[in-house]
Image 1 (spheres, rainbow, N blue to C red):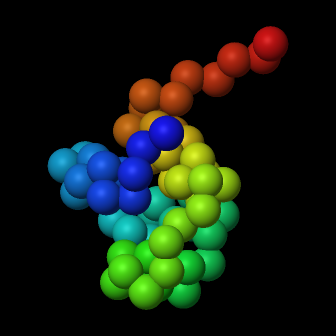
Image 2: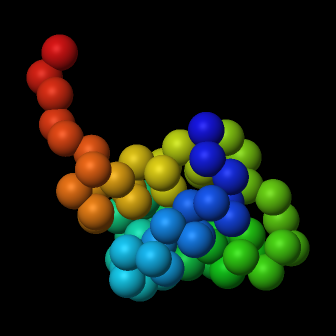
Length: 66
């Protein structure tokens, strides 16, 4: 599983906005803001959602049906 800082670095490198990432991940912007500010640590579910959303937005996450 990727850390939040790894996901954030990949997001920046890919030129993806924070809003696009948290919306694709289905997260509230406040969750993103608090995590980015270091106010709260993301749980594993949040990290998985962010990683999957980043893969989707960068075209790395191919779809599979089984």
